[in-house]
Amino acid sequence: MASTMPPDRIEPGEELAFARAVMRQFHEDATEAQLSRWLPVLRRGDFRGWQVRDGDEVVGTYGAYATSVSVPGGGRLPAAGVTTVGVAQTHRRRGLLRAMMDAGLDEAVEHGEPVALLWASESAIYPRFGFGAAAPSVVHRIDRGAAFHDPVDHALVRSATIADVERDWPAIFERLRDERGGCVTRNEPQWRLDLIEDPEDERGGATGRRLVHVPGRGYAAYRVKPDREPALLPGGEVLLQELIATDAQAEAALWQHVCDIDLTSRVVAWLRPPDDAVTELLVDPLRARTSVGTPLYARLLDVAACFEARAYAAEGQVTVAVEDPTRDQSGTYRLEAHPEGGRMRRTGDAPELTMTVDVLGALWLGGRCATQLLAARRLRQHAAGAAARLDRLLAVDRAPWTPFEF
Image (cartoon, rainbow, N blue to C red):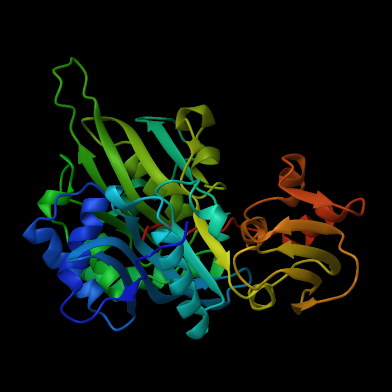
């Protein structure tokens, strides 16, 4: 259904009404403290906001900010970080989201951003706009005291300060981006919101944020949520926000630390990569009780630019027909991959594979397998072995991963 209320860019002075609408759509109370933290983000020059109004009421919101995403091989690609997307419950199914998405993605193309990225609150919504789950994640629930193979010295882990976060942690984070695709830039406001500011009204009954590090080599941030029920044994949870390390010893030390905190019974770790080391660090990997987590979604706005930005470990070629019903990326492309780089061009040749643009976006960073999606009938194969060949070309050493939401 076409919208009869077209979206408009938010103008200076309209940020407060926009922020209140976003919080209402996500069922959050818009306290003055919360608004004061978000308004500076909305007023940044790299934030582009769209809204739909019904009279004086903001009933639809869409935001994007200029960022970059790491790609296999360590390169960085400009990207639109899509956020604050929502429609008021009273105005659903009127085409508002479609109108805002079209306007926002058009603007991303104008800004030279060949891909748009987002975290989805509901996973069924965004594939119809061409977004594919490019960087899967997992959730661990690890019992306290789980035994580790070859434990390392606990004394490697030290308490960290805000000064340590500001001075040392960004360099560690950039090392992660060098090694893994799918990792989005964390700008200074995001660092402040994620790991520096610690407002009491956003702790959800847990403690303030605890910061630890192996200086210069890795860090972890977590909260502890005590068990309020009377019990003979402690039942609190360690809520792990982030754990990143530049070497295996530092990573093991940080996991040992968070998995053996007094007066707790388990660690809950969200947004972890599918190839997380912790399951192999444990003597009994089942103590991690790993489940599917939220993926980072990618919308390819320039198919050729996205595939030519990444590196390839294998040499070969495959021809793919792309179906893009909502934008202009439909066509047949030949991917020619080499260790020196890749080339992706439209071609008149017969395709070996056919897939929608969201499926291609899911495969782009090597986080998903074409053979698995073929078995699920998410793509079509016209030449024997083409899906397996594409998997070999797109294979990566480390799974794509962004450890924070935006």
